[in-house]
Length: 275
Image 1 (cartoon, helix red, strand yellow):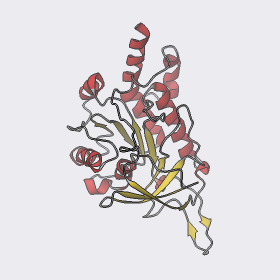
Image 2 (cartoon, rainbow, N blue to C red):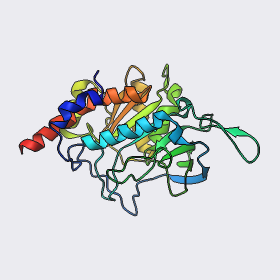
Image 3 (cartoon, rainbow, N blue to C red):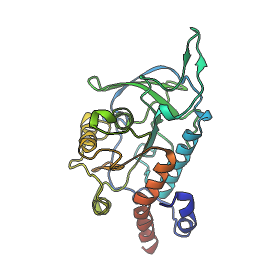
Image 4 (spheres, helix red, strand yellow):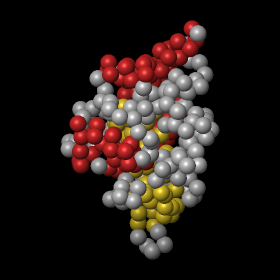
């Protein structure tokens, strides 16, 4: 499997600006009645670790930028891009810090479910590991509510946090033999010809499209997780929503993106050039 850097010489010869139509045609409208984040959020404090000290978070940020550049993170009607990512705190290897009560805390632990990208990334913005990632410390499915830590209460977790947390923290509930450490979510291969392409690859596809960031959205993805366990399967398609790549490392996620998603994006960009 070639990594994205190895593929870039060929990519640069064919790359054109992407409006987002290459990635997906789903019209996920953001309105006052249907906000981007559809679960309640509670800010419980500032980040207790410096994400910029983690090489993995920096690598994940760059992978997100590559995904957007290739066209898998279209701009929604609120002016912010779709697509997000998450990494498990257990692989970050961040140093612990002393708190005011004399105890030590790190990003790992039973209440640290996932480190997720912030909600509402501006187009072209490179996620800053020190300011743009959010630690989801708890998610209550019954209340459909998340607790989180970030640099500021206004920096909230991705609208897909319920799905990202499910992938990173609940694998054993689905009968998986191991748990992934990285999730990359983009808006491609979810409908039309992209869905046909995913079918040809044999990727697990949910049968029903739902509104994103909802309990129904999570239920559809979890059904795929149970019927197609990780690591035998590493890419899942939410019909009408997008792909979810699960991997053991950022490098593996990058390789899977190059293998499974990038060929489709390049084909669509080449079609746009012709027309």
